[in-house]
Image 1: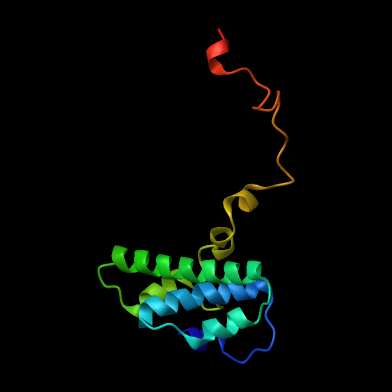
Image 2 (image 1 turned 90 degrees about the vertical axis):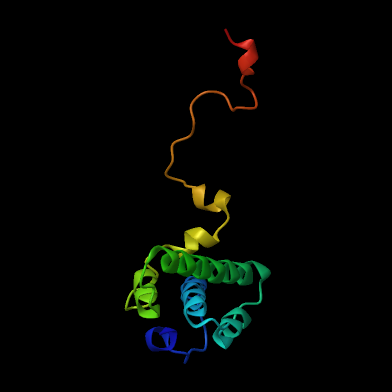
Length: 130
């Protein structure tokens, strides 16, 4: 299913594409029960430990989501699980990037308005308030 959707003829990958492929590889691993060699190729495409860890986290997230989807469905045939998690164009139906990024990075937003009032470190403890 992975080979049909993504293909394995690539030379360079952007981080986002690698994370999407890793998520799909995680799903495929749980369906087929074997670790694909394609994952090693995707990991080898990046030199930085940060990028490699994002790819590994997306892979683990794909495996987790596939296990959950199989457990929720009474007739967990591989194609049903694949279709529930990855669309025909190869885009994950759930966001592997937000799942793969640390929480502090996903909650960070420049569009949020700053909190009003003093920072919590300067506020009185609740026991000192009436």
